[in-house]
Length: 80
Image (cartoon, rainbow, N blue to C red; front, side, top):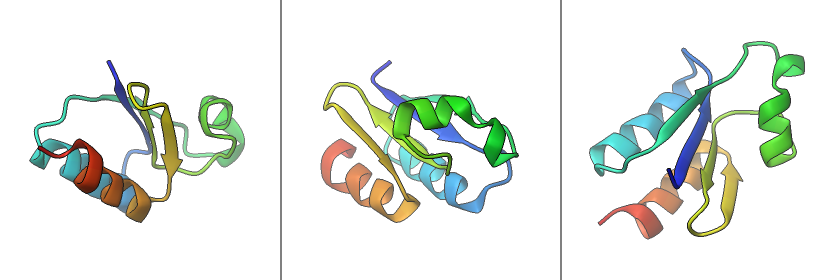
């Protein structure tokens, strides 16, 4: 799958990104992360930091964090 989202259950910023992906019928895989920042090693490996959400678009070679940046990317690049 070319779109992956690293998210935390209950995170309002992650919900915004999930909603935008779903509203635009974009297929993606969610990787649920641990609540403790210190346990988010997979997120750090992928993005260099431990915050969520993180979107990975392997087709375009893009990895990004910060929900507002991700929402703009979805609108400008992924939405049809």
